[in-house]
Length: 70
Image (cartoon, helix red, strand yellow):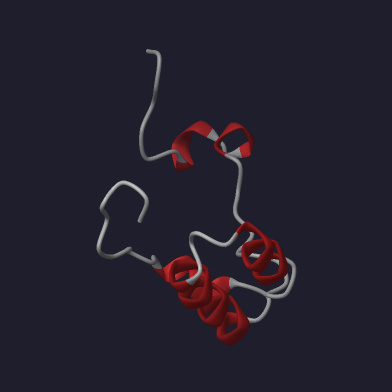
């Protein structure tokens, strides 16, 4: 927002959050309050854990979709 962005893209990972409704609400509130650090701190402490994922380093080679540094 500070740099002129007029929107954000939220991926499907929000639905894998501990509390998807709270996470979605927190994202909207964070965008609406992007210039208020105190409010952002409060918003960030409320939605619970985000979506968990698998670390690429822990995946077997045959499950990796892309190989880097090869």
